[in-house]
Length: 178
Image (tube, rainbow, N blue to C red):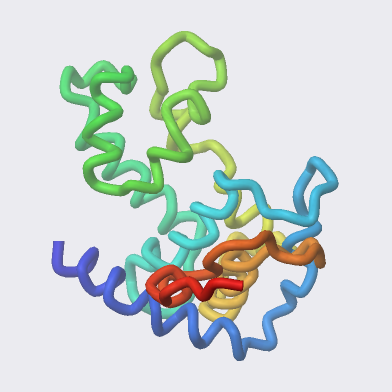
């Protein structure tokens, strides 16, 4: 629980560092398999959460660290120990990590049988690695993670933003009449 609170506390700092990063992710918005310049919501939640999987705190996240995290979540949710997590059990995963509201039960249920098996959950390729690990090293540096986070916070399509508040500070400002 302490490590989760620490991860939440340092997220804003990592995001700010990412804005200054010289990470090789200048085209992260164009990686979408659908040809869009926006990172999909499921991919975005994985990119934002990636730093929290650094189990040994060495500023590098490996595939093995992700699998260890995923295994712990799965074990905690599989109440009847049948090596499957149904939709009712899935709530235990969401209770630990809200990322799994977006990367939901259906996302992991590859064979559409209404259950997520250990293999479907733990061994499914993690989108963060797919998007950032261009060298196929199965590791992500802190600079890569911070750079990806900064890219996911913005629309990289080049289109003019829609009217309305752009962030919480804008939303709190009183509207001026024209």
